[in-house]
Length: 72
Figure: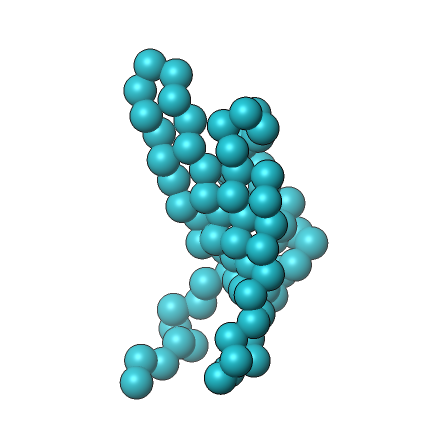
């Protein structure tokens, strides 16, 4: 599992990116729930993939509030 923290230079907002590798054997939803409990006001993207007999890929956006975002 890799966790990256990025800071936007213009808006000074911090976001996180969590990449879960298949060999880690972790559930992306569990990681998202744990992140939300520890950092309730932060934005995070959880990336994971699993291949058993089919390919499963997912992105989970944690803390994304579309009502307050402004498009310029």
